[in-house]
Amino acid sequence: MRSTTLSRALRTLTAATVGVLALAGSTVATAAPAPASRPQAVRAPALVCTVNDNGVNYRGGPGPEYPVLGQVNRGQNLDYRGRTGDWIMGDLWGGTTGVWIYVAYLDC
Image 1 (cartoon, rainbow, N blue to C red):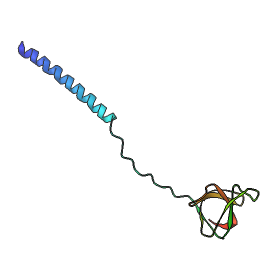
Image 2 (tube, rainbow, N blue to C red):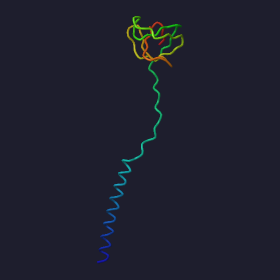
Image 3 (cartoon, rainbow, N blue to C red):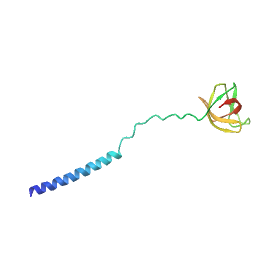
């Protein structure tokens, strides 16, 4: 009788241990640490334009009726973002974003 009780106790303990281990295993699988953050790659612009003259106005819109926001000189780079007619819109490197420059003053 004693061995039967002992056998039942072992079976119960074994089943409980397997259940706990299975539960712990699934908990560990779902609670895995987050992957280490990796630096994001910098996306290169599709097109870079370069100003080809000195004292070139850049404007707030695609046309001479828009206000002049400033001037740039030969060699200034601009990340191309779009075009309307003969006006290129882009972001000046190290400067203002969303500016418009007449296409004749840019080499793209």
